[in-house]
Image (cartoon, rainbow, N blue to C red):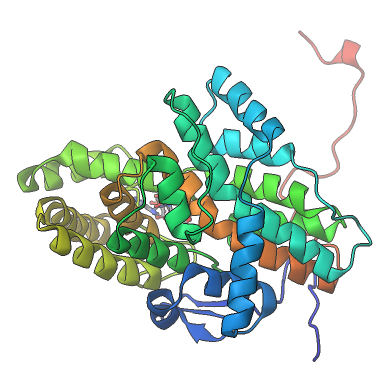
Length: 378
Ligand code: ACO
């Protein structure tokens, strides 16, 4: 099979295809709308790391492999305690904990060895986030359960009880939906680091830093705050209008690539609606729908030259809230999924083995004359 290589900032990938005009996303050739609802999350991990659907034996083996790497070492727990003493948020704690890992990966490891490291990193993310949260709240850390899958284990380690199937499934749909998305900022960060022949731990640490920003993975917390601040339907228009008049951004709207509704938002909106309906209380969902409709109308009026539609973060906020995941863990929960995409891109970048260098263009002054410091005046 021909392996395409990156040229300057143009990067070839077989992992996901984002069509911003049509509003379509496929993962390894499969439509996201289909697989996000049908897959267990481990199937998604397999597809991204190995490029194909797993057989049931391959899926079992991957599940066992993940289970073998879920338990945190005492030194990782110590690092999390330090992070908490320093008042660090979940993403910074995650960054610090991952920095403290030692893996077998090295510049000349073969692909399978790097893949094993990638699986170890993926397995550890939910354990780190849950342990951080429990320690922060003065609670005992809960060891992962060998009987539970990746999504259920996260909820179990956070809350200490086995989640009901509907909650595990809702989380799994969320994890499937946000797992990979072309050359987004955090994935690109990871690939740039790997392209220098650095290691996957460094790439993971860089990607965590990139995802943390409010224009990327940090949006769902503020999106939920916005809905709660609005509180009732009559307040949606004055609240959103005031924000736009102040030049502020409405969180959960707009995307660099999509010029139509983010297809992930469509999947998550449906899953969220079903979840709220099954729980028998639609009040928050209905308010969120009203806020969304109002925001879209106002954005179209106030930014007529720009198509700004709902992005994935808007419904992420609602689904994670309904799962009782604290707002402070929203971005870290996103990272639990996206780390799989990062790892797959790191492996692909390693195979391509070409340094990524962005093409800049100089816009500064040319041909200036140097003057000595004595001649520069006061
Ligand atoms: N609310 C208000 N105005 C917006 C919004 C928004 N959500 N998004 C874009 N705009 C406006 C900008 O203010 C700017 O207006 P101007 O030309 O009058 O100055 C114009 O649209 C273009 O802005 P850019 O930042 O250049 O647009 P881009 O498409 O690159 O932005 C981004 C994408 C950064 C996601 C932006 O839409 C945004 O800030 N959204 C809010 C944050 C958010 O929801 N982030 C999550 C993204 S999804 C993800 O990362 C998984």
